[in-house]
Length: 330
Image (cartoon, rainbow, N blue to C red):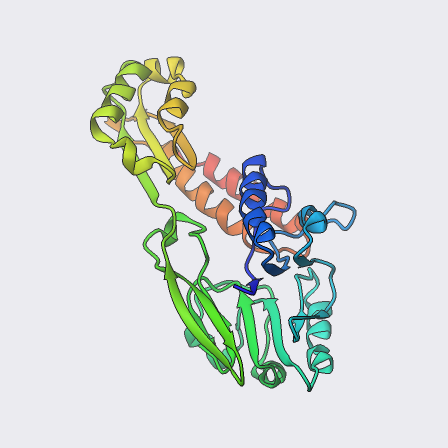
């Protein structure tokens, strides 16, 4: 490739884990060493809520062939005789739309022009295409200004979709277990007289969800590990993203549970997480109330973390109200 455009979230958080930073640097160094130029914009998951917080994209300052954009304003840069107009994430929707309206003013008539940003088309005119949540609502009239670009590379939507010259490519990796059966793609652009788009399928890491392992009959962690060894092929979990739920854990096992043995078993996985749920006895019936509470909370938390609140107090209030309501469930 002559150049790579990255218009999706690069990180799941503006304060990424060390593992995430290590993977980013390791793989982007491959592009750096091959002298492949990269244009990358920051988006909502990448961008700190507070302006005084150091932006994670500052790690690219020492990358010679990288052009990263994370300041809350529209910008442009000419690379390989192509004019890239870029609009990173801006927390304020009104400011974003004001900057968005400037995009056509940055078009260079003697160049190929590519616009890069990250938002979903949530206007009423094309709601039939959307199953995503977006904080910004771009109307069809506002969107028309992008018709003047030769190509528009957007992120946010998790499937491959084009309208006019505006295209989304799917995520390069699955970003949640809801997407584990998705096929992933990226777009190749051949830029000559006009821009030709070729959609290319890629393989991703396996996502394996051992959702509910019943632990009621396991007396200790060693017996649980023995069960895992007999039922899980180590080759299938190598370099995979793995999630597991140990449910109906009896009191003895819960008290003596050895997390380290579980992590050691999954040490070759790319990423591993697990949760433990204790067996509850209610009115002589075995029913795991805590299980359902945790499911509700986990899904609610995932929604809250992927939704932008202008006022963080609203988010805190909603979380508190949910917890209070769940306390009343017995």
